[in-house]
Amino acid sequence: MTEKLGTHITLTRNLAAPAANTTAAAGLLKILLAAQATGTVVQWAEVDAGAPKSKQPYWVTLCDTQTRLYDANAVVRYLYKVGNLALSDRLAVEQALEWEEKTLSVLPAGDLSAILAAGEAQANVLSAHAPATAVSAVLFGALYYALSNTKTALVSKYPALQQWYAQQLASAAVETALPAFTANVVKVLVREEPSLGNRRVNADIAFEFDPSKTVLPEAGAKN
Image (cartoon, rainbow, N blue to C red):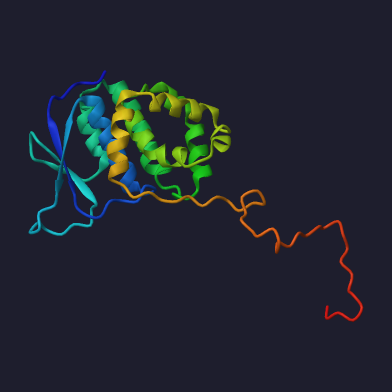
């Protein structure tokens, strides 16, 4: 059950907006989703000019204790009060978050097929946690770039993941969080795998090779 905190957090932007395919961007989406689902207000701030330098793209300051958190999953745990859950429920959450941290998030960002396959393999975990929960916030944040930048024909090869993604997109938390997320990340163009179908070549100069035909030398030509 989601507990309404009735409070706010301050999200301080330190560096340039992260690229959409980075762990930093995924973390930002996790935080925004968790805040929406728990009724937590996000106050945006810019880093003070005289503040100590940090390599972190952003951090969250908790309003009640002024504690600063840098890890997105730690923010999600705080907002959902994971520590207050019954032991079995907490273990289920921690098991899912550990898989995301140790397995999913270490896959190459450009290998979308590997990311989707990993998500499909955890279909039982995805279906066990409804939208607006801590696990769904973390996994949606981690999987969003791959799912939103892959053609439907490829995503359809992973039916359980595709169904889960559709359910998440329909949730109020996701609908509200996505515009704020998009406005604070840098879009990354996805290169399609080269194929005859997507090539762009002048048809007048394109060389069409037919392996069934034998090319013989021409008399008098420099072959």
